[in-house]
Amino acid sequence: MSDIKSLNLTELQEEICTLGEKSFRARQIYEWMHKKLCESFSEMTNLSQSFREKLSGSFELTTLKMVCVQTSQIDGTKKFLFELPDKNSIESVWMRYKHGNSVCISSQVGCRMGCRFCASTIDGMVRCLSASEMLDQVYAIQRITRERVSNVVVMGSGEPLDNYDNVLKFIHLLSDENGLHISQRNITVSTCGLVPEIRRLANEKLQITLAVSLHASSNEKRRELMPIAKKYGLSELMEACRFYYEQTGRRLTFEYSLVGGVNDTAEDAAGLSRLLRGLHAHVNLIPVNPVKERSYTPSDKDTVQNFKNKLEKNGVNVTVRREMGRDIDGACGQLRRRYHENAESQ
Ligand code: SAH
Image (cartoon, rainbow, N blue to C red; front, side, top):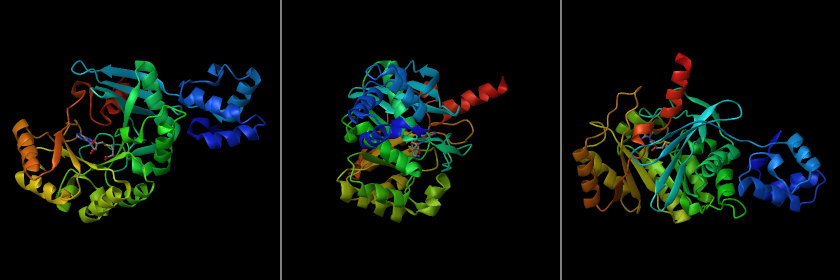
């Protein structure tokens, strides 16, 4: 059965006409799904009973089941574990900032990129998420919290550019004026650095923010932390980033997780400054979140501060990311792993 929530309005209009119904019905259904965030055809009360039955016979309407939610006592961050229709589970996070509410979504079940410090990738990738399953995370959270979501970051489990077509559809649906209408400027997609896909994305001319996970300023160190660096070297990656900036006019964000004794020296900071010269980029420093399956530890406070100062001295725009939800398995993929471990040991 086809996945109705992943269709754009034009595609939905075609499908509805094929069913022998008037095309204005498509707009009504679209609004039920993407504006009123309803979860079943039976809620679409301005459609006749027989039409609703026809819809359930022809289309699947995806929804998520909330398995658990953890709320941080420190900052109110909520981490959700959702079950997908095929029983796989994914994590999403809700964070409240001064400028609005932000949701961090997963783009795949698991991940196949293999970054050494990340919990999402430990058991590899199970499957990609559809556009509707990415929307469902935002919609479910907005319904549960009863507060408008104003920012969305695709920074949960998975590599979004390894699920390119669905992520692109997701961005278009999420920013569509007939849906939640979240501005593309408030959508961030984070990638470990898939060079051909960064170039392809640059040509879509979107207004989203692209975040690139760098984590090292030399090929040697980057290869140790991120296997993808063996496929694409830093010069190739930075060239693709420059191309993205030229094509879209959007400044990039670079993520740099500070790992104690691994990538946090003054030399590393100098290397990073050189790499970013002329890019007008923004750097987010994040002390690595320790994952119990991995031996990495975060850099200490002074080291983080020194690293930041060094970048600033070199004219790099930098912030130390506020750690949200550290008491609730904040790092990618940790909640899902812990939940499955507990389920298995029972
Ligand atoms: N695959 C994408 C998006 C998901 S990860 C990417 O690589 O960018 C989102 C960010 O969190 C990435 O920068 C990732 O490297 C980082 N990350 C993953 N696990 C982490 C950990 N344990 N501590 C700190 N940052 C982590």
